[in-house]
Image (cartoon, rainbow, N blue to C red; front, side, top):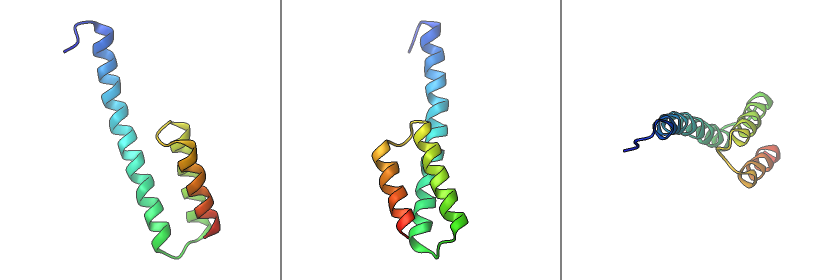
Length: 76
């Protein structure tokens, strides 16, 4: 266990970020699965592209994952 206050704070921050990132990544995966299995409207495509960009900007996914999936969605 950490003894220094800054380390304790860092542990608290990391655990909060971990929960937030896990939920965003799970939501993103669900969105991508839905797009693959169903008829796709332009609104749902735009929402998926937006969620990919948000996840990338927050550092949850890397650039290649984002670009690969954006290409796949735009070709549907």
